[in-house]
Length: 429
Image 1 (spheres, rainbow, N blue to C red):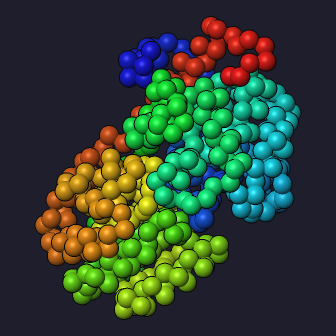
Image 2: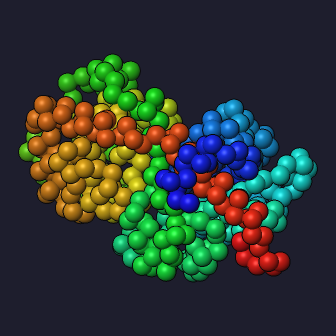
Image 3: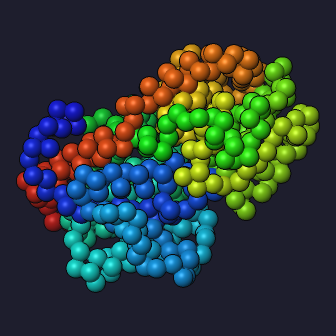
């Protein structure tokens, strides 16, 4: 049964999936966006959990405790709980230092479930650290294990996003992609890379693009958004949002700003960053000063997911000059808000942005080409409006309820298979 062909059958038949353990070990879905460890994955976990609850499932999201005073359990929304698990010190720790916490994390989750008498039908892990713990949980509960890695070390190395990845991560991912019952990816591009780099057959991969909260991210009055944020109504606003780190290519964008001919009234707002981003922010400030555009660049800092929508609505163009994006949720949210996107022609961005229709795709690290298309868009209000309308229309298919339906169908398929054909004792799930 394919996801598409099995949709109606899954709706008609009673699902055997009642409760899902959603694993997000290294970062909480409630954390502010734009920090070093927060971004699209946080949005995904929170949104998809809520959508699954809306489809009738109960979802517990397990994350590592980083605040000693946080409650053990928080209600996120109806049907979704966030559970803080003791594993390592109750403080922020670099994710590169967390691989030794996975066993303690899994033990904490098992203890929580046992104390509550809660049974989970399926484990859904996010990122490799979670999948290491999720593997232990799936075996303990004899439950199917689904993983969405969001990024993979061998992919980052292959595309040049990273020059080094820890051996522990590389080795774990090479094992996990074959150990889990299904790998969920956002694009066909990711599925091809899983086959080329890891030898994962397509039948073990489910391509389910993320959704967009179209109630939160939709076209709204630009003047009202700017008034709310205190932004000059006459300014021409470029917006970049996400983690502030070198592979995001903000140096390329600042370089492009220096090459633009249409700089009158232009302001670049950069959303994201935390105290661990200070060195990169300082580097970017120096680049802006050298390019003579320091007065045009404003670092806003981290904002909540609720606030980011207002910034999209205030922007004329959203820019994503990344080295690689597995999907590009910022681009999708911006387009749903009716804003054209200028992005690198890489990874999932090449699928999310329709070149010449909803924005422009630019070869990576080409500040002159970014400058040319930004000049073109900022100098043509009618073009921006047309692309913005086309962008909002294109994003109508990216709906979290549709994502939840596809995931629920996948979950049910895997659980039914596990019940029909029990795994031999001691075998991998």
